[in-house]
Length: 100
Image (cartoon, rainbow, N blue to C red):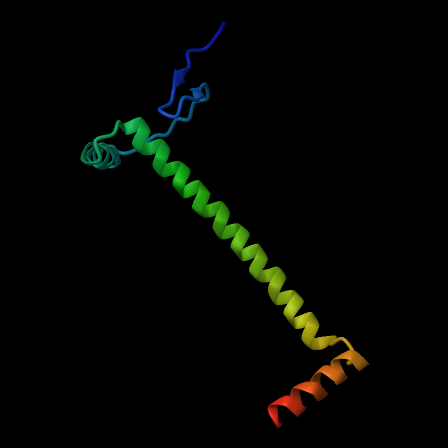
């Protein structure tokens, strides 16, 4: 039996469903906020939840990069790459030009 689906404002079909139990106070708050923005409760809730989901994913991604970068930094400090002739020449040229 086919389920009813509605079209979102972006033109995509909404076929999935989410449900949540809320208190009367939460419902009033959500309804008031949606009304203040001139949006339906459904649109307000979906947009708010989607924004929160994007923020949570981005924060997790940023944290993962931060940990990985920290590990790479510590590894570079503990296990430095040996100085080669090219680096010595570069330092020598810099010092000569800078007068150091």
